[in-house]
Length: 413
Picture 1 (tube, one colour):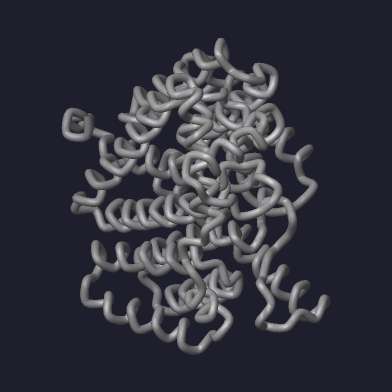
Picture 2 (tube, rainbow, N blue to C red):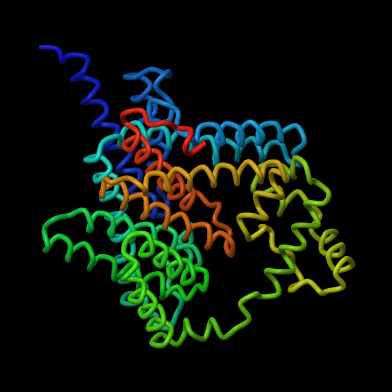
């Protein structure tokens, strides 16, 4: 007997859910590009095949993220006409932007119930915790590195200065699941999983990671339970006092002259491309511009020696990166997107539903950590763009759950 259309659709959506879960599981691992491609295009073809193109939208009804996303995308495409390297920009508009819009739409439409939110969350947690435990074993046991050595997972995005993005995100998801679980032994088991994640973040010895962990944890407790804030403060101080390598890192000049110098050099480039930027291509800055020219221009303008002989080929800061690639209007549109995203989560956080409220705190805190790390590090790599996309997807899914009866959108617009 043939399956009814509704049963067939439900079955295919279960297959898509499985495929997207595989994508989550392999994302931290190196050399999985082929698997990720199969997961992306396979799930997209199945989704369009069963639903049609008309269903390819945020949560079957525009979220407040729709307008800022479209505006930023249109501006980025418009910038192609003025891009320094058009081919690189075309490639990266698809590879580092449009692809993640598609993935976000798929996640929002497939993981669209509370049960599926839990499945999505557990897949992320399992993937990151497994990766961290395996990396601990390989780094400290197999390779025999001392505990004072900066910890990192692999060379494809999981470097010591960026590992904390998925790690902190997963830690907050564990908190969200644990708070919503009723059974004590499950709470204990989940909270124990946070320990290797916090250790991984601390052992990277990245000041940006510690700041992100401390500030985002403070914010989570401020909105969830203020009386636990002293516990967070004591733990942070305890980590600094008991782990000398990290403490010594903060004894150094936090401003780091090279970072400041490079940011000012990037601003010299922006002066020449203030409106549309150099183009969305991520390699344009390092390979299509005369960086020695801008190095000399910077040194003449500020009468300061650049921090090293060779100019960094990346803006090394997500904010100056977006500025120089999309111009001042593009940066404004990006800030509009970020503002809308946090405004959505603020609205959800006022819900009387504990599940939605706690998850909104967790996603918002993860985003704060991401934006803090992004101030110090080049976060625009596929591994971390994927986790940012997951944060945005969860925000949109939570919005859908919060507004399932059609709440007045003007409160967040």
